[in-house]
Length: 264
Image (cartoon, rainbow, N blue to C red; front, side, top):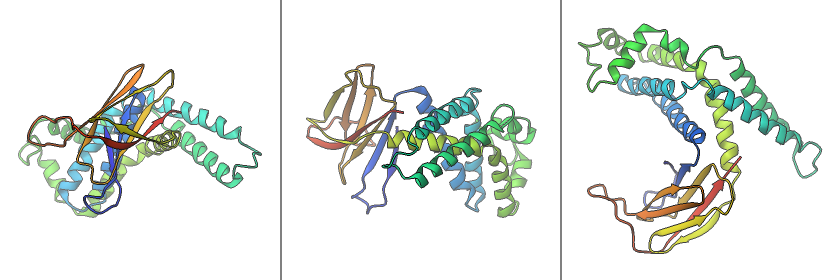
């Protein structure tokens, strides 16, 4: 379950929780999170941050390893392009905005189609990186006596390390850009509704409605978090106290929240 914090003072933050209802969306959300981590930590200058960036890069390699991911994204972008084309000459739609969206989709699709081989294959062909990847899976496995070459790299100039990490990431950026468009369209597809959970519990019957993503926002300062589960016919939400020392317990209070069902 993903969450995003708006830039509000501590104690006054609105938290958005996201719950995927399909394996495809689950994969896209995981990749979005991992690409954000690589970008964030690669921009830092510390060797520790660059290690975290590399570990996230290795995780992208595993999550994005499905051969059909690229083609799934290209097909979805093409479907969205056809939908946008149907809005041509609609007086209620800005032609400039429409042209911009179409150009963005076409560019992202072209760059993904230009990718050759399995996603990240060049990383798998790098024996030095794969040695780090294999050792990183072992607790404490990247100590200097295990990987002296990696220890040497971590002592190189920060700018050189940044250049290396960005170089290893760059060939996969078309995937990042493509999934960013799909997730943006998905998140924008829903209409938010105000809901109330009585005694911390809420159930929504789907009644034939399709949804790929559930988005839920809690109010400022609400001392609870949602546990979301979903089936074919209903979405169930249980609000629990964020107790870090014991098993979370359901709140016995009324909780107001904002719910959005998203579907492309």
